Image (cartoon, each protein chain N blue to C red):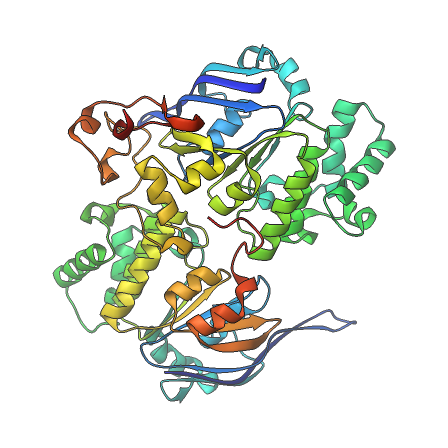
Amino acid sequence: MNLLNIHKLNTYFPTPDGLVKAVDHVDLQIADSEKVGLIGETGCGKTVLGMSIVRLLDSSAQINGRIIYRGRDILELAEEDMRSLRGREIAMILQNPTTSLNPVMRVGDQIAEGIRLHGGLDKRAAKKRAVEILKSVMIHDAERRADQYPHEFSGGMKERAMIAIGLSCDPSIIIADEPTKGLDAKTKTQIVQLLKGVTEHKSMLMITHDLNVAASICDRVAVMYAGEILEVGKVWDVLKNPMHPYTRGFINSLPSRGLKPIRGSSPSLIDLPSGCRFCPRCDFAMEACKFKHPEITPADDGQSVRCFLYT
Amino acid sequence: MIEVCDLKKYFSSGLLKKQCVKSVDGVSFHIARGDTLGLVGESGCGKTTLGRLLLRLIEPTSGQIFFDGTDISRLNQRELRRIRPRMQMIFQDPDSSLNPRMKIGESIAEPFRLGLRGKSNRREIRDRVLELIETVGLNPEHVNRYPHQLSGGQNQRVVLARILAINPDFIVADEPTASLDVSVQAQILNLIQDLKDEYDLTLLFISHDMEIVRHMSDRIAVMEEGKIVDIGDSEIVTEAHRNLITDSMLARV
């Protein structure tokens, strides 16, 4: 049974230069306790997709489609109902802890904020709970640390604090936006292992451009490019047998795979190619790719791909 | 080209209770002309401090730094200014390394306008800027854009063009792709390799990613807590320090 069912989701932003199609016709399912990786490059729309689910976008955003969570369409909830869902049922771990944490509020208080709101605990009980959560994300000397400010935390510790905030109300789904960005090898490994542990019985949407992180933690991955999903499948199926030329290019540009870049750069989300969006950069492009837009179609063994090479 | 002897940089803080951080603690090494030395280590091991010391962007506590035979740790400001154009730095974050109020073309033209490459008139400058823009893989239309209108990868290309405009002999690249995506990272790293060969540059390449460093370097130095704990041929050092390979504990794609 799918816990979260995203159906034909569009998130567009009107700008003076035109309509930015940040998320375009996205379908994605997340089952109970399933971890899904959303991978792709900067500006492909991954964060906007995550923010659309928790409805944290600017009011100018035009969101269409359906996001069904436990039988309810999130997009049709009143803001008040959304507020009681956000954090308690679906929590988001925002990217860049340095800018996402409140610099003038003690870390413990930032964690306790949600607990007081959703759990109805008093100040003291919430604080105690915050310290427990800090301990569970492996912060040493948690009592003292809870009284400190974000600038007294290292990069890895700030990320742990962000995870603590996400976990604070024991949500069913966590959306983690680039939780390992900017961390060195050792810290990154620790954070991945921590996330793996704390989400054991939860669902997760892990937004990342780090394939090693996705491979370590996710059951399935969705590859996003220029606002749409190009390929979905079990994580090792996709990584070992990437079908879409973009996925292949993405994997081959890893240092461990010889640093072979994809030529060109991603298209503007205002002025998208009329055919396949990857066509201008694709080494396998055919005549049809230039003017016909491929649909995502199931291939073998649960893998789906949006490419004419497979139709 | 570069010879460093017993270089130290201590940062002290605190008024009553003096605390001393030995950021770089007695480091010696050399880089041969045309070579790339990779410098790897975890965050906070002192690798960025070492890179900055080499260009004397910060003052060493003690030790010597020879650049092409000159001990730059002893130069005064004026002498230093004269030698600086020959050594340049690529910083981590390309967006903040460019003047946000200067058009890309102006940024790249600046070294020419300052006369670092001899006298040249407007037309000559224009031609050379366009030439450089092409060399780093940008389009002529980018000349009139501002840094905020370009992507991180494009801005890093601008930084490279600007550095080439100065025509240095030695470049310190401090995690030049830390803020870039995998595929853009591959583009930029390949570009740096090509430019290094074409312009006969000597490079100190700083990163925490062993995989990238191995790809870029002839020799590798491993830094831990301010000290160089191993230095030598790329392949040998990589084999000996497999634990430093990013994500060694994670799944490998």
